[in-house]
Length: 152
Image (cartoon, rainbow, N blue to C red; front, side):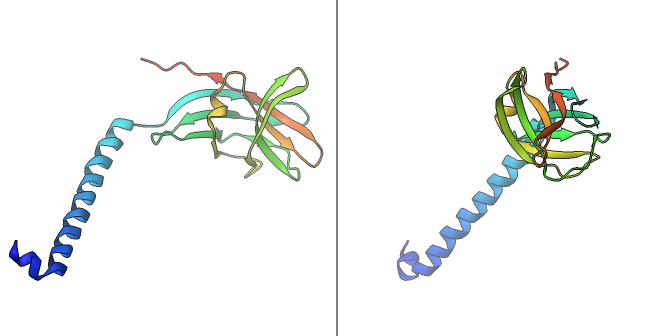
């Protein structure tokens, strides 16, 4: 080890190189395992939109991604009336009263497939997806999410 006492920069370079190489190898091996073990997205719940104020069509699906993230997906046949300040909400209603009301995000398009990141609140029983016009304070459509039984 005399060589390292005389050349501390060389020792430092060898240690850093070994650490970086080990980290890179670990990431490659770990990533390879996780991608095969995780598989494809898993459908957890879905529901068909029913019109409340304006015609709203299509379905909403709650999907668990292989990464573990939850996504709300609106179907390719999703359609609602164009309106200003339109948002997607997670909702629980008791009659006409809002028991739970959480904004997912601004509606990206008035028709067609789209997806949104959602919190674990979306997976709780009784949640519905609301398409809401803030300017007119009206829900245009609701999709009650019902759990989907997995085959197997």
